[in-house]
Image 1 (cartoon, rainbow, N blue to C red):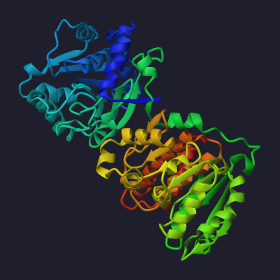
Image 2 (spheres, rainbow, N blue to C red; image 1 turned 180 degrees about the horizontal axis):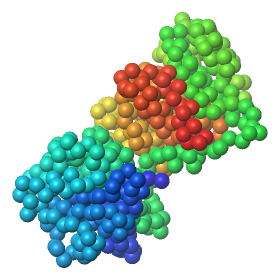
Image 3 (tube, rainbow, N blue to C red; image 1 turned 120 degrees about the horizontal axis):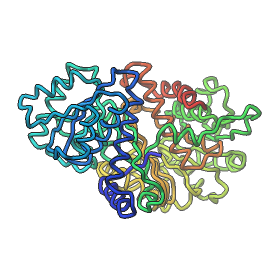
Image 4 (cartoon, rainbow, N blue to C red; image 1 turned 120 degrees about the vertical axis):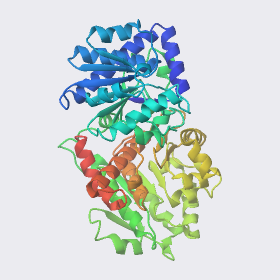
Amino acid sequence: MMKYVTVSEMRAIEQEADRMGLTYARMMENAGTNLGIIVDQEYRTKTSRSVVGLIGSGNNGGDTLVALAYLANQGWKVIAYLVRERNLDDPLIQRVLERNGILISAQEDGEFQQLRIALQQSDVLLDGVLGTGFQLPLKDSIASVLKTVKEYLMALPSLHVVAVDCPSGVDCDSGEAAPEVIPAELTVTMAAVKAGLLKIPAHSLCGRIVVADIGLTDSYPTWRGTQRFVTDADWVKERVPIRSDDSHKGTFGTTFVLAGSENFTGAAYLAGKAAYLAGCGLVTMGVVRSVYQSLAGQLPEATWLILPDQEGFLSDSAIDQLRERFRSSDALLFGPGFGLHESTSKFVRSLLDIPSDQIPPLVVDADGLKLLSENEFWYKKLPEKTVLTPHPGEMSVLTGMRVAEIQAERISIAERFANLWGQIVVLKGAFTVVAEPNGRTAVNPVATSALAKAGSGDVLAGLISGLRAQGFDSFDSAVIGVWIHSQAGLLAAKRINTTRCVLASDVLDAIPTIFCELGR
């Protein structure tokens, strides 16, 4: 699991570990060695194995020197370029020199000619100048080095840039970045993902992010107590089982999708098909007649329950037909495409009057969220750990906060209201946050305009409800659904060769490939 921390949290974790016997020197040794291992594994067969490290005066410079020594032992040609002064009797520098590494000092390289030659002779660049303690602005001496490298890289597109912990010049809390920051294709961050790396513009400068172990274990209380993490393929794969060949549709549950209205038929289709693509055994669509007439031929795998309407919107009288159907459903999704008609508002009030233990595990999306907010203490009337999937505008309606306030503190806002409401909050948007009450928080490491299109949220809600019907718990359903959805968006954009033209239906079409890549 890739844990997610602020700079101050990481500092506190390291201080505690040092007090308990995992010294700073040992952590640096572990960090640098594992950095070297990652670089060797990633680039050994892609390059002629030559590397230059930009060395700062702090811990990142130390990590990089350890990595260079390791790579030298593996047969790499290594150059250490000292951007900031370090004592030449520093044992880390001596170790590199003892392994036939080359040492260059920026102070003796006035026109950066030696730096340019080192870059030209290398396949890989390790950016180890500045780390998590950096705050803007950059000092001129460092800015000039980074700017020179950045400009030179435009003529050397084949040089692989690896950022050590973070790209130098990035604020690891705010995500702000100096204009001289060297874009990386790979960021090897130490122990945990730093908060700023999953913010704009820093994230666009990081490339792929991997975590290097520095020796922390659950024997260190502060580390053990860190509940925020970044979702990745390994986390998802561990929780999505391989399906048994002797299973049947009942094995994988029934999702009841209560969605759509005369003006919003597509929402019901997208949600229903996504529930099936999540692996659910049976999807029942509870819709008004106009929606049924539009969709029945497009989703032949579904069963249908035609519900009474008022002016094309779900009528409150539908509640009587649904009580019995709820008993045979393993998950219930309501809200996509509902509209905000008074009749549907009355329906939601009637739904909240049903004892929560008589309602299936619940996912609420879109207009369903807005209609919930019209009811006092609505969150106390829902089944425990209902999954709520607001985008920032819907979160504003639910909380009374301004969108700007929500976006400024997305993680803490999602956590605060998950705790207050006692429900799972999926705060959608760039780096979607999933928070469970008084527990874990998952941050999805994707920001893409491919998902900024009508219907995308309906696909996500369907995925989550389809997973929930299969017996996944609420939190896992939400986290897995968000990850699959975002990866499908990225794949759809790759297939089309642009994010601009991706439709929600393209995201649907990409979902099977994502499960296939997981081996599931």
